[in-house]
Image (tube, rainbow, N blue to C red):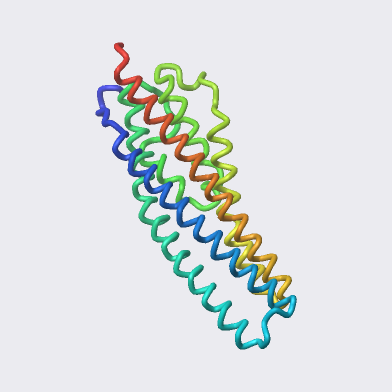
Length: 221
């Protein structure tokens, strides 16, 4: 199995992924500021700060426009960055095979493919990353290697942060009062905080796996 795969350094890809994650963090911080402004506007309206409803709608529309533009930027980073991340996962899966890992459960193709299979994408990618982590740190005995808590934390954050937009959208369809819209804004605020933590968690994983693979490659057989 080892002879069928060529080892290619994941460091360049990991460098670009880290830059992507930091860009995400910056956009999420800006979204937090924008959403916080929306909350303040809603709060001020609730407490009668605005002299009339027209002023309230105008100011709120300005805040929402900023949030929408930042959300489009966020989605662009998400979609464009996904290509880099999937390429990195695919390469890392090939690398551990080149390093000598055998009888792995996930092929290079399916290590990416499972992210796109409904229902299965709620748990299969977690196992994919566990396998890559273990094989990167111990290629010849990967199945016996202890599964890291870092992968579990990352996956919980991934599921949680990606659930927020759906929950928020469902609540927004039924929202009618200022209090309800404020609760949705606070939920979105929490979603951005989760995403920032998720980015740092993924930076840690990408760094550790990439460094482990380079270390294994440089270690004499």
